[in-house]
Every structure is written in C-alpha cells, then in structure tokens.
Image (cartoon, rainbow, N blue to C red; front, side):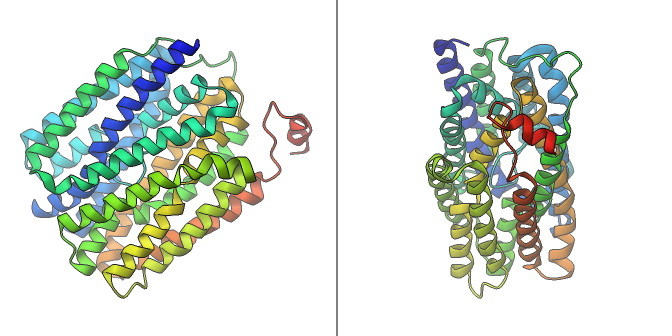
Amino acid sequence: MSGFHASRELVLVLVAKGVRTFCYGYLGIFLPLYLIELGLSAAGVGAFVTLTLAGSAGLTWATRASAERVGARGSLLLLAALTIAAAAILLATRQPWIVVVAAMLGNVAVGTGETGPFLSIEQVVVARAVAPEQRTSMLSLYNLLGYGAAAVGAGAVAAGGPRTLFAGFLAAGVIQAVAYAGLGRLVLAPRAAGAAVATPVIRRIAALFALDSFAGGFVLQSLVAYFLHARFDLGLEALGRVFLVAQLLTAGSLLLAPRLARAFGLLPTMVVTHLVSNVFLIGIAAAPSATIAVVLLFARQLLSQIDVPTRQAWVMTIVRDHERESAATTTTLWRTSAQAITPLATGWIMQSLALSSPFVLGGGLKIVYDILLWKAFKDLKPPESPGAREGREAR
C-alpha cells in the first residue's frame, strides 16, 4: 500500500469512525430511557442491551467471510447499508421490540467504547496502513477520535427529540457509505493457504478478552446511565453532561497510551491501567451521593480505556500478518458474544438484588482478567522478535 493510498484510506476510515461514534454517543444514553418511556422494565432494558450485543456478535461473525469474498470496502459498505436501514426503521416505529431489532440491525453501541464488525475491519486497515512503530500512535488516534465524537454525541443527547436523533443516525450511515466507497479493494490480505481460522494463541487471547467483556457487560454505558437515573434521579440532560465529560476524559487518556507503551511496554500498560480503573469501578457501588459516584466514574474512565489502543496494537504485533484478520475478528467476536450474556442478568440483578451490585461483580471479574492476562502472556515474544521461536517452542 503506497503512502498516498494509506493516508487517503486512513482519512476515510477516520471520517466514518467519527460520524458513527457521534451517533453511538447519544443513542447509548437515549435508547434505554426511550424504551422505558415506551413501556419496557429494567429487565427489558437488560434484554435490549443483550440482544443488541448479540446482533453485533452475529454481524462480526458474518463480516469475516464477507471480507474474504468482497474485501474491506464491500464489507463496510454492506454494514453502512444496514445502518441506513436501521435508522429508517427507528424513524418509522414506536413499537419497543421493533426499536430493539433496529438497534441490533444497526450495530448500535451500548457501551462506552465501540465493539463489533466495523471495529474488527477498521483496526486491520489502520494497522496495515502505517509502519509498525507508528501502530500504537495511530490506533490511539483512531480510538481518540471515536471517544471524542461519542463525547460530543453524549452532550447533544438532549438537543432534539427521537426523530431528530434518529435522522442524525440515518445521515451518519449515508456519510459512512460515501467514505467507504473511496476505500481500495485490496485492503485486507487473503487468508494463507491451509492457515487455521484461529491459532491456539489467538484462541487463548480471545478467551481472556471474552472474560473481560463478560465482566464489562455488567457496567455498559446504557446500564450505568440507567443506574444513575434510578439511584440518584439524574435526568437526560444531566446524564448527557456526565457522559460528555466521561468520554472526553477517556479520549484524553488515549493520548497517554503511546507514551506509556513506549516506556513500559504494551502488555504492562494494558494490565496496570486497567486494574487500577477497576478499583474505582467497584467504588461506585458504595457511593453515597451522585457527586461521588460521578467522580469515581470519571476516575475510572480516565484509566479504563488506555488498554484499548495498546490491546489492539499488541494483538496486531503478536500475530503474523496473514493472521491479523482472524485475530481481529475472532477477538472482537468473542468479546462481543461474551458481553451479550451479562446485561440480561444485570437487569434482573438490579431489579431483584441490589441496584449497585453489578459494579462489584464487573470490577471484580475484570481484576481477575488482568491477573490472568499478565500470567499467561508476560513472556510471549512477537513472531518477528528475536527469541520468538524459542518462546513458542517452550510453550
């Protein structure tokens, strides 16, 4: 890929990422409250989150085969078309379960960060478009843009009614389609002849990432928004301000990721920042006031997503080039599938046990993930690094 095409394709991907995550920023807050207004209970909101993530997992699974047949551009154009169709459905109905189906079809993000099929393809495009030494920095920029756009979207949630917000989602789908139409045909490499869909190392990584996402399913943005609304009576405008600041803090923290990774390494940066953030997450459960809960949420967001670009760069580094599509799709699929399990239980737990218990469950399991990830991969060498073969043979 020439420098010209790499630069052009990066710009197009960043444009698509920005408009998409802007809409996710307000939809993740608005849709749970909108569904409550349409008659769903807390358990129903949990089911909505689970089904939305299940739809995202299904689309991620389908994306791998589609990308091999029609390349990145064709796959992303198909996904943009589904976004446009989903937005049209949202504009046309007020039936709660049809709204849920539309959210599934449109891959609406219900967490603080994005998961799903767009991410699984775009991160490979970004990784291939730059030199290895620039990978963490560019993936940080990619995620920084996403969180920044989502923050602006969260701040705009109270600016319009349902039709305005859904019309914005429709416009974003059209802009994505135009951006993706400009991508080159051969962005993704074909799978090597006889290569496994997922190597043992990829499967081990995916299993641990699934544990992290399973734990994260307890504290997705939509569920945190519901918690703050139900526990402290925060309205839509206040929630918009809270998540505007939370997303901005998250976006700003991504600027630290390349610097920390260069100083301490990718894996230590991932594990330490993530572990400390989960201590703050558990603290939210005991917060006696909205102010303290929000401060703890902000502290958590300042650290919790530093591992996102470092994790993406780490995965792209420890696998061979022809394994990158498999690694990105497999880890994203396992993460999204695992995350889809817990929200349904979370709605029931909030309603039947304790409103704050998901923060303890999610934070505790995430700390277990951090420890297991470090123990499993602290000695792993990238394939191209000196000693990598010896390390693989030792395993």
